[in-house]
Image (tube, rainbow, N blue to C red; front, side, top):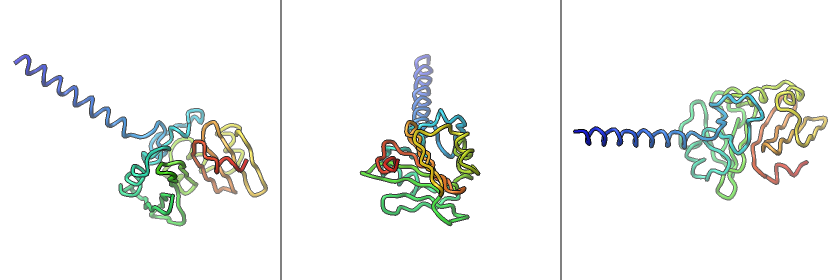
Amino acid sequence: MKTFRSASCLTSLFIFCGILFLATSTWGAKYELTRNSVENPEEVNAAEVSLFRVKLGDPEATAVESLVEEKISGVRAEQEGTFILLWDKENPTGAMAGVRITDGKVDLIFINNRFAHKVRGVFRHILTAKSLKEIRDLLGPEDFPNETLMGAKLLYEKKGFLVNYLDRQVNVEFCLGCPDLFSQF
């Protein structure tokens, strides 16, 4: 009887550890854009950012499964060429977020101000910013400024993201070493 109790306790412990491991490994990155309220911009790194559990470097099959095949509340997903675009079902005026797939892997995640109602943390404040000064106050000085009369591109290369600001139209692109993203500076 004593060996039966110890065996059942040991089995229960293994099952619990397995469930805990699976839950934490499938959760996504450190900063899930729609779940985690990371307010400190120092804690944001593109390698740890995920969009509905899809992060940079994930295979195309994972991105399609998580974004297109899985039903996301209030979101319509379409795969167009190298992009998977996410549209707001209630206001489908343009894609609000998405990913780009190159060589079978996710190499770019983007969000814009249409996604502000879904995102949490510091990027909700960025997407709803009324001025360029407000963005700089939140994120600090950029690595490479590129400001024109029309707007600005704020490159935070060390953190792996770019903020495009054009008169209250804000777009944030997360990428690790994308030459096409950083070549404009």
